[in-house]
Length: 126
Ligand SMILES: [Zn+2]
Image 1 (cartoon, rainbow, N blue to C red):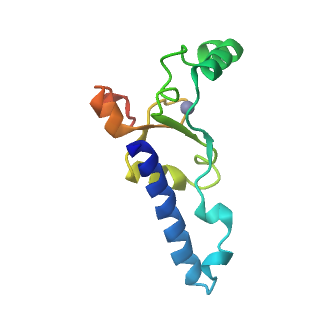
Image 2 (image 1 turned 120 degrees about the vertical axis):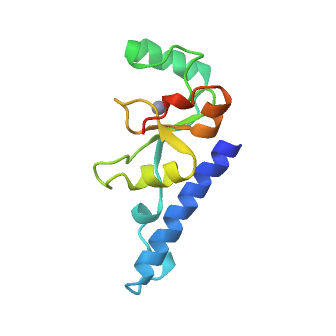
């Protein structure tokens, strides 16, 4: 649940900043574009059957079923992770305890406090 709460905190922080920034131009909070105040997730938790399906379809590109941090509730994939927003969403997620762990998948973030707990904090990419 801490991972969920921290993702929500990241989303709340992005929304608060967007509302603050748009207010400087006289835009009321309810008119701030959803794109400016939302962190979109492509994938969050997935169950074992979904991981088996992914592994079958993607082969080595998908984790062995039972080993994916998505199955453990420790990973999310951002929908808009960088090219269009200069990494803004990753910044909010990092500030709330999430870190990228797969160099070839910059959209994939894992919850660092849980990585620390299982001795895998070194997976975080600086
Ligand atoms: Zn992922």
